[in-house]
Length: 385
Image 1 (cartoon, rainbow, N blue to C red):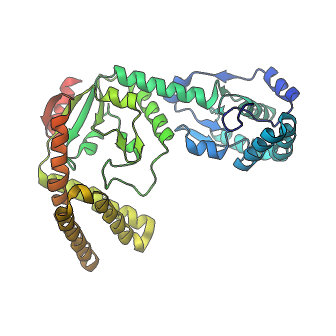
Image 2 (cartoon, one colour):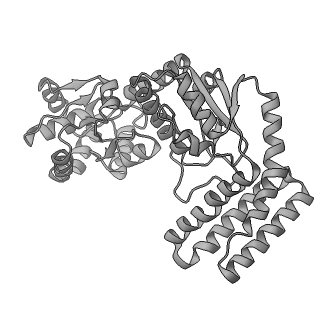
């Protein structure tokens, strides 16, 4: 017996009704590359619990069945068989048919070029497509559904990353690698896709995407990059993990076959860059989200970041930096002046991040092809392209 949780089984109509839907010969599409390049809107009719586990950048969840409806039908199917599950499906979904159609139609009025899909391109998307057709609109559905499209994205991501001439922007923490990446047209911002700055203090208030969402977003980014015909793919030097998401191993391994460009930035500039990002801009974000409590929430999160690297800092350095951080926060509370935070930031860069980075560069097998300031690197890339 097929598992309702893993197979495309949706008993909301009788076998005759399903067969009638198939005979309608409604449009299908497997032009997945076009969906990516045209930023095509997508209607995901899977249950919300499935959507949350992973979907596509342009998809909206307008389910045929709610989580509870799907759960109840699945239990009935396992306990009493197909006929009983079919009857329950009709009882649960039938009364809300017009409500579901109305949601799809409202979206289609704003996005008439949308496509529709379920997990495998089976009964759920067929039924949804037929109901929309009854309302007077013909909408294509993805051939093979979510599973086929995701497989396409993963395979294309692996292929493109293996064929790309990758240049990796490296440099010490705070050197402005992300700022530089944003000035380069033929780059992909991996930290942006991961919604994380890639360090112990790299969390944003908004959560990171689900792993599957990150992988799908990366697939989209690589396909769009290739379509523009760039000579090089330029990315920031990242570890396998970016926060709690990770670059799929085949793609990560392909990236590491590239060449390294090292961004050289003086310490005083690195302190300013880090201070602006982790203190000035972070405080603005926290205060806009938490109002008067923003500064305290920011302090707690930054303090937790220090605690996460306590063992790697060692007790003496940890205590010194922690004390400087706390003193700066007290000054911030007393005078609203945040500049004292630059003291512990410089300590952290010099005594923690720099030795760790130097060790990683020494052990790296990725060849270094250029070193220089941001302007010098932009000039080098201009000559290379």
